[in-house]
Length: 209
Image (cartoon, rainbow, N blue to C red; front, side, top):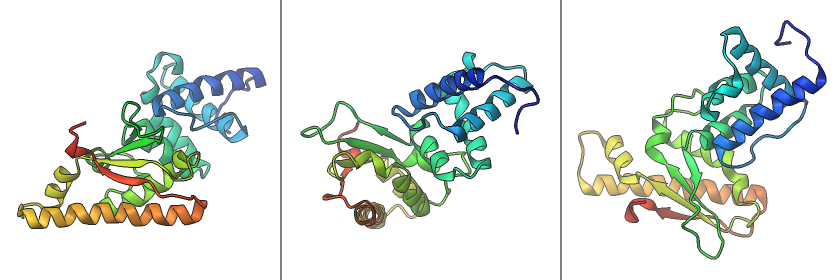
């Protein structure tokens, strides 16, 4: 479909493994694994690089993300694409050194979310929050929803949403709205995934982390 030259099955598998390693490295966890669709996607990415005289192996993991996501979108893997964008670009990442009793702490950088150039993520904040939380829900599956979602740059984003209206009461109202949207979405996900708990919301601005 993607390549003008036929490649052996071993070569296709090797290219797919190389690219998948880069994607999972960029995301900080295993997002994709070998299957027929991923081999097709890796062929598409490799073809693009080759067409422009480039080699996948010489590029940093993050630089492969846009091409991988375009190829995923072309075959209808929108949710996987969104997950890769969210975790691979640092919109959400695990905070290894802050945990409570082994419960996972995942940090959502709201400012980075709004600055995302990827079309698979909505620019409007509240729809974007729903997309992000849907795409990463499985990170809490192992603990049945027990864990934390940290919100970073919460007040800064609230100020930007308010524009010229910088009254504290209005800023706090937007902060509460953002936290409420996250809580409601996580509660909905709990029902869908049959968790026993819901991740708790933490304002990371308080900790300056």
